[in-house]
Image (tube, rainbow, N blue to C red; front, side, top):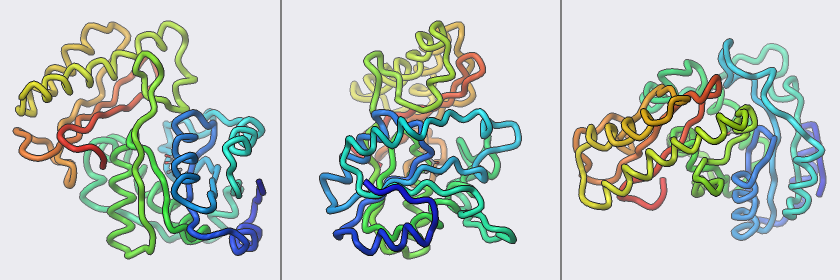
Length: 281
Ligand code: PAF
């Protein structure tokens, strides 16, 4: 496994890789969720490239950029074990050189859910992913369903800009009690960690109601809300049952839907979702 820091080193090493190349962009502090993307890439592609870059442009001024968890030696050991071919670990100045001023903005899709509450977040994500895709030039890139809106924004952007690759959204990996794996779970103290299972519990109860025939969007949102109200440490940011293409809230589910939520457990904001009526994004 080769580890490189600069764009020119990346390009040199990229030339020697067997095609097709699969790419997994990450912000590091890897967990089983990231590794499932690496494994999928290894199954479907001849070579796998992973980037580790805590992207400053996707964090708001009040967000956790400086305290975002980092452990590069551990990440590299995990990636080596998974058979990753090439790891790109750039400094911020390599991605955003002096004078940088060009951003990528998906419009409608980023006005709702996470985008409404985290202004500029998806502009930062879309911009860095475009830069990374241009540098790595993979045939496939892998992202997680856990960050469903992010995956939809990236898919839309790739389609709108005619970028020559396929985006593969992979299922959420969960802890035994249902908590979706996330680098931010490390912020939870033991009591909060226990409380955090309320997120998936709420989603699963509503998913069961959908499977039993419930199609009313507000009823499904309410089912999640009721389950979360039973957990005193949980503070709901939003609960959404939205159309998979537009992310507009649904009164009634005719086709598929994205049932998603953002919830504070203590000071930590966690997100999760399930898909209703479809298997993947
Ligand atoms: O999901 C993440 O880790 C990040 O948002 C991504 C896609 C690597 C862009 O910085």
